[in-house]
Length: 580
Image (cartoon, rainbow, N blue to C red; front, side, top):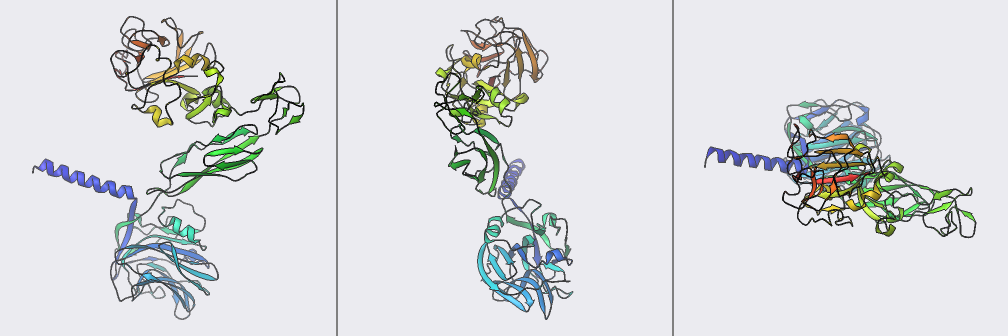
């Protein structure tokens, strides 16, 4: 075997081990030798509350037939005050609390070499002892706090200066709380790397970097006789949950479907409402029942890496005053009429005779379809990138349909009118109308080079905000790259069949390209032709660079061969076209 091959194998092995460790989120613990190493933490009243939860992970590596104390904070002798944890002489776990005498709670057998979670609580009347999140013993008795002696991790007999009951093994994730936590709080969080602050958490020792520093900023410990840093228990971390924004509806809006938040966890979401008078939730469907506000909670289950968490938004349901078919004023009668006196499902008149919309038009359902992405973003500024419903009398006979909207770039409000990542299958007809029932379910589909092509360019003239002065956007390879944002300064069309639409303003450039006539982006709005470049900025000279949809060669399309001194991008891989 060559030295090069040997080193490559070592590198692969190292990276594999690193990946395993990173995936399980294991961090550091302190290992004690069982003879003279331990941590000493000076006396602190906050580590000795009258009601408490003390919890940690411990791994016993030997010492059968002796008392071994992973953690101790005791005083006196007699009377005995404070608390202790032991792996006792019979190799079972034991907790004792002092009430002048020792009040003992026994636990299950110690398993040598295995990490075990230990927790003890006292609520003012009752001790509870938990092992691996399971309640194993209770005892009604008194408790007297340690008022002067230090705490030790890895050794006992804190009532005297010389330690005893040295612990042969490792300890990790020591937490001391000033109240008795519930069984679910203990079990659900035993594998959790807690973020701070936490109400009632007095000390938190994780032993990162081989130190006994408390994450709460007080009650730091000192390492005695060099306990060593080793790999600790595996724990889950907090997920990042975003894109769950406040929603405003009207009483007359139909039920809508909750869009799942964005999360780095794979845990399943469940949804609830805290006000059933305003809205109820079944699965992902929210049914509006009354005006007011409700908090919608998305609770995400934990997975192998992330613990369970939740996020909320506020649903505001507004009341709308309408005129019924019987001429009455109401805020709840669905039999309302429009300004012409005809029954309506989307608008009515106020008591002053003014036209009023009865629906929110937020685009979150077909029943509340908006007019365009721009209208939705304008009326609902918290709208995020994703799928929305819009309706237009010139499209699908007014039947609502879904679009993908960019609600971020340059203030948002962009409707996707084309995505091209493969030149196969394009022709003159479908260049402006392909897969019009949107084939994407999320942003990942839209930016993927492996999902199908899409075009609603033929509808763009009805979606744009105005006849003149509307904007279009093109980006290629990755979002907001190799393209830009333009304003059309004339009454221009997205399906113009000649190259005359040249009065445009480049508002924002993505990249360093410059206009060229034949071999890149030309200074004109893309036009529609029955040639190789079906949708193109080409000047008509036959080179067909600056093309968005190609019917001839180049996969998916020939884009920028000559960037006019900037950076070229001949084969972009994917290209998008937008309107607002």
